[in-house]
Length: 232
Image 1: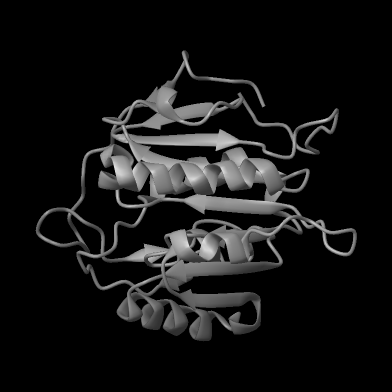
Image 2 (image 1 turned 60 degrees about the vertical axis):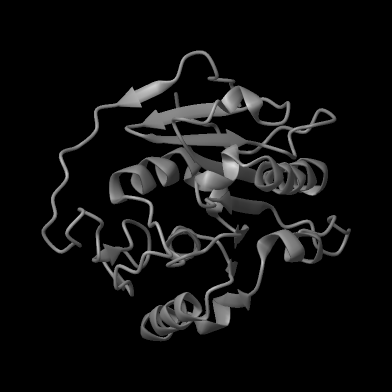
């Protein structure tokens, strides 16, 4: 993946449309954008404990991932509505592990998976991603070297909190060390966070309005090359 640290792509922020949203413009109607389940709704009632990625940003994210989703397993470590993991399944991931500490959010995700008929492809884990990461992101074995798509979209404040960032960095480092070839790590921050502070790696940084998306291929080592191109 070609590094894009110093040549960020900045899309023009779209004017907020509060139709179908809360008073502050936060969307309450979510849908899957592409793939087999395109257009299907995702349960979300506008609670403050979630921050769904906007449709336009999510569409760009999955356009960049492209074929990487096919046959991979998705890990959404700060799931919220679960829309990233569900979109990943729609785009070709065989299964998804969604980690979320809030039981109300887990109930909403379960409601969506039941309506979509994909309960057998989704593992819901109620708990703290920082505690569970070591159990979930295990080194590949000869029996299972399935590529990972790892989404990290924590509350933005964690990136600037020293203790929170230390924990986030530990997860990133683990993915870098153990992600099988073909894996992709996707990190979301806001633009107040300096992405140069991310752990060393060949990061591809894309900027959309107030959102940074940072992509990294952890399995791209020892001469192994990811089977998909990241579009420029």
